[in-house]
Image (tube, rainbow over all chains, first blue to last red; front, side, top):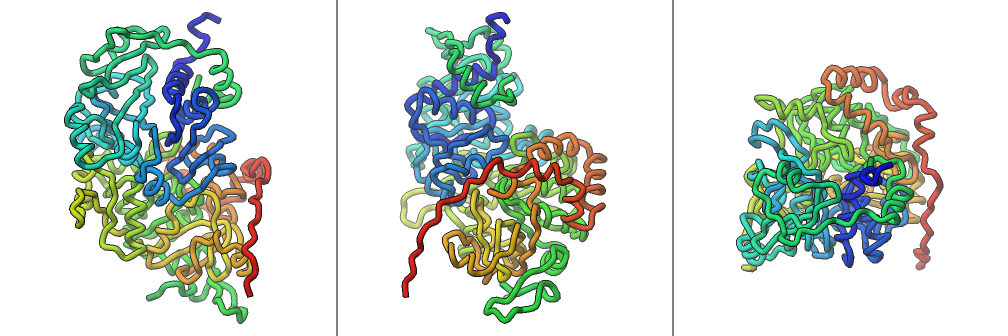
Length: 260
Length: 323
């Protein structure tokens, strides 16, 4: 086995996202890669992490990797099973969530997200799932993390529909509106892709801060629909450690459903 | 007006207890309580989705329904494909963990769309049922700021706080004509108990004009009264109790059977193709008389594979006796 084949792109994404959760306390989990990342963080950099599922669970201890957001394994052994009203009203809108994970069909340079339609709303070429809890997570969770693969179709200059607000038209506008309207959320903070790790600079725009092993700046630029900003001190993401890989492969996704 | 009355002609004779039995067959409950043009909510967030009721509505050929659910899930994909619906009210339209809902997508990506959509966020839908249940004119929530959702759905409206401290968004009450919920157990009178994910079934049922409860088992009222904190609905608001074990498959019932994830994965290629979808409906819904025949077709081995790997009983609590 060559060194490049020692881990998959999905494993790199999971590990990078998990490390970003260091020190966080309460995390609103999504299915798929975010779910594995959060569980890995709980076993490594954030042992105090509480897992919250929108289906109505606080303090979950899933014994297996759930396919759906409402799997029975998230209930058994949890701290609390709540109604969805309690979950959204008291836990999320009430301000208890530190980090929320969102997915995106389209995302722009300011981290605004579309998960509703491609094309015009009334006559979409592609009908996507819609908000679910995403718009309220974007507004009420203190920070938003996004894990997604890069492609020119998803990293676009202009999104077709704003389902979940990011930094709006830039940091200045976003900070003013969030303050005036009393949002608890400070906005998107981390985007982890198959090529690198992005944060947001002082203008509220996405900036490549770390490049994953094997990824190139050319590949990054080819899959982003605007001139991406690159940190002057661009880092190299440390590859997954043997321990991180062991936890993913032995405990979190032994069947390789999400990681192969 | 008609709240909580038993289905006429259905059920078992009154045994002389204070509570009237509301036991009914699925066919009778749907025949009497679900009408053409109704707004129907079959709720249950991943957990406790009454596929059995949805399939019976298809078999009885209801038309022009408005189907409300936070997550339309496979059951509404199947009902839309079968032609029972003219409109969906929802917050997340997909096959959880798998992909899209093909039958619904084909009808809304077309030109012109053949299915009307009215969409909210999850909290928006929960808030709508809550307003409906509490007879409020609207429910205020802190969602939708700086999104395109209020443009897509003009029923989502900003309102000034009457106390002068800013703007929130209002969603209107949702009052289904019929709400159908699946539960672990109920008494014959309709006192309904649920554990595991609670979703918004309580809100959706209290908001509705008529309520059908479908259960894994009917239990003596004493079982309910021994653990009143577990009750989500009193029989007072329930019109019919249908005993239909495995009635939530391929959804699940905490402690009884697991979500049939294989079914959700298998649905993806079926729902991508209209002919395959219609063939599936002919075989598994129109081609069977009811849930029992569906379960026979599914087979004992498949059902056995969905049992929990081990029991995980709750500890019991002491409510105390106070005389």
